[in-house]
Length: 297
Ligand SMILES: C[S@@+](CC[C@H](N)C(=O)[O-])C[C@H]1O[C@@H](n2cnc3c(N)ncnc32)[C@H](O)[C@@H]1O
Image (cartoon, rainbow, N blue to C red; front, side, top):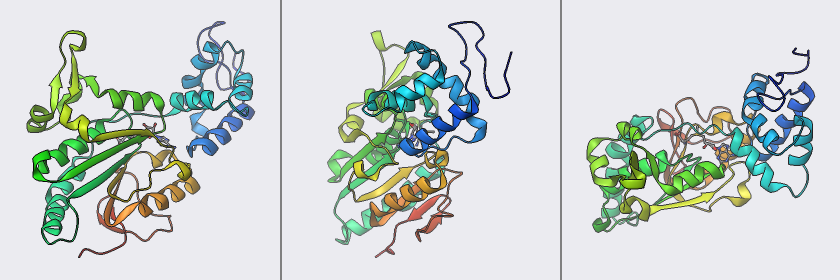
């Protein structure tokens, strides 16, 4: 039966969750926060056991202790990446938080059009979806942008999609989702930009070539600014990512994101996130939307 310091017991040898001691949990907590900025609070023991037990067994290891020794050893970067893949929460959907897309359509896109006509900006926009998961967010952005600034409009659009999880990023790169995912895409955009899979892709929805042509992908760890894209970006979407971070890593990441914006750029955070507690002075212009530094000219 369960011991005082163990959060799970094996159901039978070889299957079910492995036991994790409090000491082992603290070691994983520190490793995950150091590597990815993600803070696993005391209530996350069961999550760690649930998500890593299978991996520990697949490696042929007897315990979390031996897995920790392996994953934390120098030169074992590949296994740390695998471990983080298992621990990341990848939930997402198309046009999540639709008010953000309304804000783009009603306020940002007309503003760009006016500023470009006045010679105050180039007809070129760079957008970063930081923590893009399986791609629903950056492809939504690409649909919103291309429906307003189609390729023959003279505007040059690029959406950079990055994530820590190699698994999620590979799915994003493929641009293939179950057809049910189409439900949250506005019909005109669905018709204009998505394809229905046939034969081996029956039951799937596939990103069309216009979308693919503006998307770029890269693995970027938001907890390690050395590997970040330089920017500057007109828009940075970093929604529902930093909510998993510890306070210090979150403050650091927010500061880095704001400094990668154009002076008139916007940072979009998730519905439960804000700049509160960070040293940054960006202006909140709508719920969870921040303007970098400069005021509009
Ligand atoms: C819940 S999803 C959010 C996806 C999308 N932004 C949205 O709002 O729908 C969180 C994503 O953040 C990624 N993530 C977690 N820690 C990260 C880090 N240190 N660097 C980059 N991405 C990270 C996860 O892999 C996951 O795909």
